[in-house]
Length: 58
Image 1 (cartoon, rainbow, N blue to C red):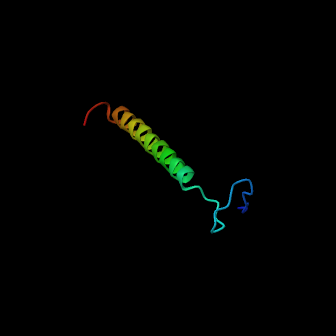
Image 2 (cartoon, rainbow, N blue to C red):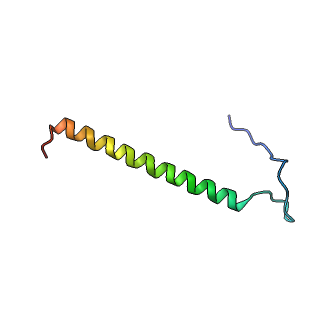
Image 3 (cartoon, helix red, strand yellow):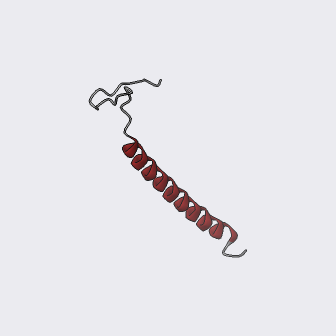
């Protein structure tokens, strides 16, 4: 079950929000690169499997 936690060690802005947009954007870029790398590796794996299954013929 999901649990909501409140981070109290970061500074609050005037609007009582403690989200650091720069950190969030860095995390987003990292996750995007990780995802794209994983997809490319899977595509390579499936291409290899296709080659094995078809015996190298298309």
